[in-house]
Length: 450
Ligand code: NDP
Ligand code: 2IT
Image (cartoon, rainbow, N blue to C red; front, side, top):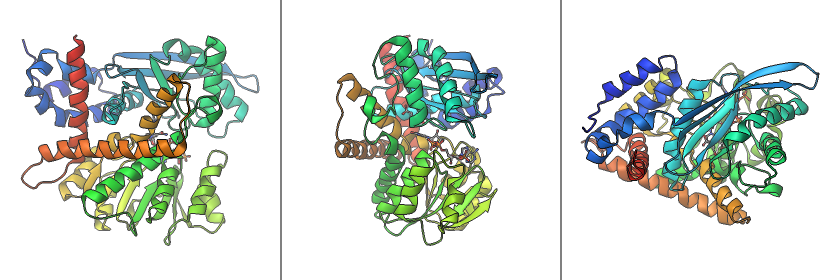
């Protein structure tokens, strides 16, 4: 019997089973609303019970990381790897080290990753992992000891053709280096089991820049579709990490004025716009400074506002690039009141459901992270293929590939958005992204049988 599904039925099923997993339910809900009608209209999808299977992770690995820190004290952390769906290729997605990491957060990220990876057009399934370890304020030696202990367990679950982790919040080049070193020692293998590696040992040019640059390439595509450009636009950016700083750098290169950056302690406002050299300095300093933004203020670039977010600053474009649920309904309204006409997510799920609704109902452009921040994982895909060939491509070749991938993701989302547009002809990029990704994954699932 075909499984007729409607939104309430599947959502209630998940809600009953995973009531406490708020972020996971939030991410699934956002997608379900758009894909259930597509599912219900397709007999093959229904026969294979695609929606229910796609919402549930194929595998969740839990492990405890017990380790001895540099002072000889035993520490214990919780860790997970969620292998959500592998039909499109090996599980692929980052690792996050942050005290807020729990199963719900990683399940939402792994679920989102599947859709994002499908949009890139590259053969990658979706996964995510991480730990509640807080690396802030820890010595380099403690970071290394933790990474090694984490990899001692994770290594048995991953592989270059099985599951390929990468970075995410608080996991950058240094952590990937330590994780990779431990994997290599334990397995006696030099293989592309992680992406975001150092350039000397199988890393790819442009991977570090790719998420932020890709976000701006996507923004350019949206501007182009609206007969405008980035030149002269005022841009509010949140975050001051890998994604935020590279987005700011590329936006400035394209002629935009970037007026804010932020972190968990406040935001920095620079009315005349940060200079390229401010951002270049921050990119160099952000992994070692305890607060790169107050350092920038000391250098005369901007005014620091403690415990505040940047959403009430006047702008044309907002790029939330820090973390999930950082932009709420009241922030969305403040952005609209101040003339913002485009919101593109650099982070994963930074806008709450209510904030998304405010943007969509008002008719401004809203692009979900699974489309606009896909440049990072796309470059990871290119790092994997370089590793498989034992080759290393030139930076400008990879940058061109990134631009063309972001343009094609934009085109896929736009096509589906136009196809499903209502009478008002609003281009709903969220719907476009969800449906375009869903069709690819669902077709692969049907083709591979149950
Ligand atoms: P980083 O660790 O480099 O930077 C994270 C930034 O976000 C820091 O400025 C951090 O501030 C801030 N931040 C973290 N938590 C909070 C919070 N609760 N409130 C306010 N600010 C916060 O991470 P990335 O730049 O790599 O990742 C940022 C986002 O982009 C995440 O959502 C990630 O999942 C997503 N992403 C990352 C990709 C990548 O390739 N790296 C690819 C696609 C998406 P502080 O230092 O004070 O904690
Ligand atoms: O959210 C993301 O897409 C990432 N953190 C990057 C994942 C990857 O495998 O490069």
